[in-house]
Amino acid sequence: MAGVRQAIVDDAHRLGRWVALRGLITLLFGIFFLAKPQRSVDILVAVFAVFCFGDGFFALGAALHAGSLRIRGWLFLEGALSFAAGVLAYALPGKVAIVVLFVVATRAIVLGVVAVIGAMSLGNALSSPLVLALAGLTSMVFGILLLRNPALGLQTLAWLVGAYGIVLGATEILAALALRNAVETRPPLRPMAHG
Picture 1 (tube, one colour):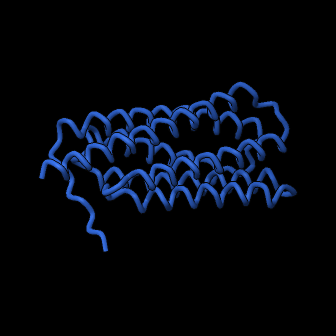
Picture 2 (spheres, helix red, strand yellow; picture 1 turned 90 degrees about the vertical axis):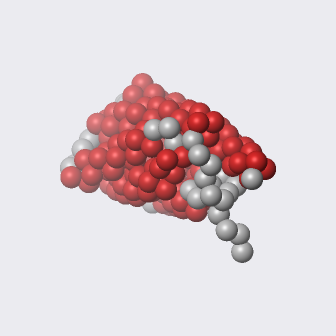
Picture 3 (cartoon, helix red, strand yellow; picture 1 turned 180 degrees about the vertical axis):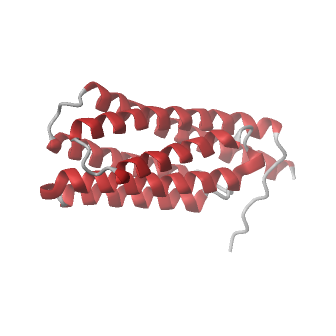
């Protein structure tokens, strides 16, 4: 039993590192958008696409290193959605403003739902599942606000994306710290059945 507990602790620590790195990248993405809102639509789309590819890579990396933790499938889904959002952003440059707005909004809503489900799945394994749930709710509110007013100017969209990135990145870093610390004080998770 001690071996299973240690494996879960090791998996949680590896997952925490990936989530923290992902949060840091998201935070930097947010700072960039707040600092450079006047940049052209092309840069907005290119940076968003690169962010989606990077975010997808880190989500898939977290999924691969989640080991026996139940959130693994959701992380794979997040990675796939992020890659798809990046492809769409590059494939449809002619309709950039509205496409980016809808891609960003839809991605934020879906990933917010995934994060809330992840918080519920990890529940008592985290010292504070509310942090992960807060990240999810932040994403959902952001997405809904964008969809409610698609006529937002690109500068306003850049500011919203920047603020969203900073809040989401900070909450992901907090969630990673909570995950890392929780395994030391919480009862062990049941490993997933393989096969």
